[in-house]
Amino acid sequence: MVKRNPHMAKLSGGYLFPEIARRKKALLEKNPSAKVISLGIGDTTLPLTPYICSALLDAAKKLGTKEGYSGYGDEQGMTALREKIAKVLYHGSADSDEVFISDGAKPDLGRMQILFGADATLAVQDPSYPVYVDGSVIVGATGPYNQKKQQYASIIYMRCTPKNRFFPDLAAQPRTDLIYFCSPNNPTGAVATKQQLKKLVDFAKQNRSIIIFDAAYAEYIEEKGLPKSIYEIPGAKEVAIEVNSFSKTIGFTGVRLGWCVVPKQLVYEDGSSVHKDWNRITTTIFNGASNLVQRGGLAALDAEGLTEMKQTVDYYKENARIIKTALDALGFETYGGRNAPYIWVRIKGKKSWDAWSELLEQKHIVTTPGAGFGPGGEGFLRFSSFGRREDVLLAVERLKRDKL
Ligand code: MLT
Image 1 (cartoon, rainbow, N blue to C red):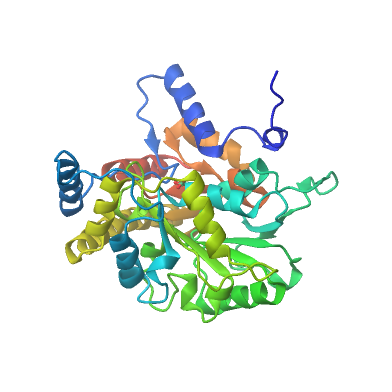
Image 2: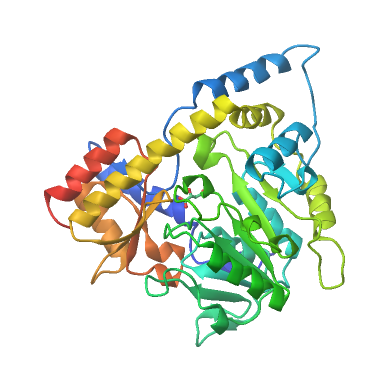
């Protein structure tokens, strides 16, 4: 018999979003006529936009010709796309050979967890996107279990609450090898200012830590002066990797395309290159993003594509505004929803899974329970703005009808 990877047994239950889908399905089995509205997972609902979609169609057609066919590409991605991302999105603050094209931020995060291995210690914002912790647990980066704290020794939870404006008290944090940081934040919708990110970069420098900066929602930032990339902070390239994706900007959640930036000056304690190792991981356990899909990414960064991207992002931002306004009017304490597609809502006097179930049972609205994002999420619900407008409006009507 095969012995189970012992780290799998350390995971707490199923992954958050399939668990939510399972509970939604159970409700539909009980009540098949229920019109359930999903404001849960951050999954896009608008169709692909014309210019980007036609680039995908052209690319598919080309692959059907003798001249246009191509097999494996460079594992790091098409040079043209790497160059375009460096130029259009980083304005030169990242070199094209520091940009690695991928099938999305989540798989990149998984490969990074393999890169840093089981001995890495890590810190996460609490609450945070569950992949940072769950993926680390899978590779064994846990250290021993501390029964008293009910936590693994290698995983530090940096509490982010309305009280500290969702930015952790870094002075109170122990040193870790890695620091996962997401801004605009999933799930709280909080956006770190330049001053805050500078503090984070300084902290990483002092501790010789590496920041894994998740910028998947950067295009939702509308307020001038808020940083869209960690590399807007001088010196960040010495301490930070950035992951990003086309999922939430052009609706590629199902199409799959993302990238990360691994700076050449990023080194381990022995002075060896992280960039080189990342290249080794990429070429060994990844065959590169789909050639067809990369053509869609190229189109997205043309002037027409960027216009379409803005329209898509604006649509979800308007959804966020509608949801937040309604919740505010109902007297809820809300955060995020501006410069971010998620609204973080305090639920007084209830556990978040209980409030989540009530909302599903009574109003047929799926959200995400805050506790699914870590202990710091208890007592909150997350509303996603990625639904269709008509569903968002209907959800808001249902919320107004009688109080939760
Ligand atoms: C979320 O809802 O937190 C995200 O959509 C999940 C993801 O991007 O993987």
